[in-house]
Length: 406
Figure 1 (tube, rainbow, N blue to C red):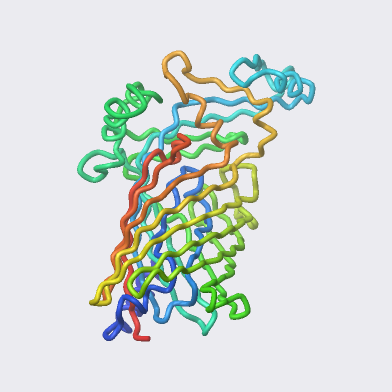
Figure 2: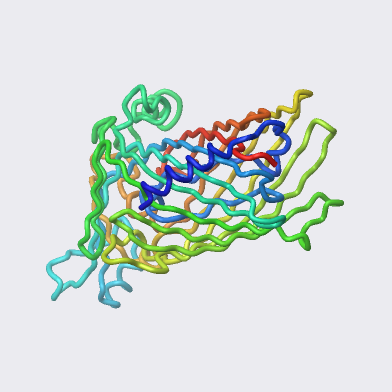
């Protein structure tokens, strides 16, 4: 169905394309930000919410394309979750790497079990259509897809294993700190078995459409203060997940506030703060892989942007974004799980594949956007300073342009 709908939408868009007479300022209606969500190995199967930092609906229909490339790596690790409350209590008294749990069978030592290994460069491709519905309303449609690759040159210049390990060995981190060289560089090893025994396996060059997202944004006049240059928007979100691993529907809500500081007629500084919450798998269709037993994903974003305008109605925008998202699994399980991995062979981080599912994920993104009278082009790179490796390093590009006249 999606394969038939998308070409029709694009055809209609280009048939109605005008754009003459538009300038870059008519598109600059808030903070500039392409799609910068992390290429998380669980997150790509559900419709995570990205914060909207616009101050009003788009004046025209806008079409955009986004490409991201992220290096995800977690060594093979196994996890046992004892079911006996007394065993859980005993393990909770011991630091996680010293816990002793000898699983025999489900009758004598009942426990849930899962294992995971993630090693791939994940590439995201998005097609987005933004349509003004009314003076204060806007519809944002996004189709996301993914390609699993080994990250070899020349298709992953900055996000391949060789580039990252060169950085570790030469500048920061030391030689092979997390076992990439031990497992082998530039290869795909992507397999996850959940606690129900269902397996998610992806191979090199696997491509799939992950889902369609429908986002409605409302820019209430009652929450707008032009004198103080303060603006707010509210969002409602519907995500239709189409992969065979997670056929489901998600629902979410978001809110954001933007403050503009006019430095002079050619320079503007903007601050954006927003929060959102997503109810994962509100509706499920058939069997699916368990991609985290925390049904709610909440996120907070903060964004700073400095923009300078030229005499020819172009602009250069420099932005810094910080995002933190709640954990994928329920925190209480971290008190008693037992992890097994190749801790003797790998210097550190052998446990991350499971451990990081119980930690909030955060990242910093640095963005540059060039605004032209006919298009906007954004470049960004994302860094995970807490070594969540989800991903370790990510780069991306976004292109958007109007397809109707205002």
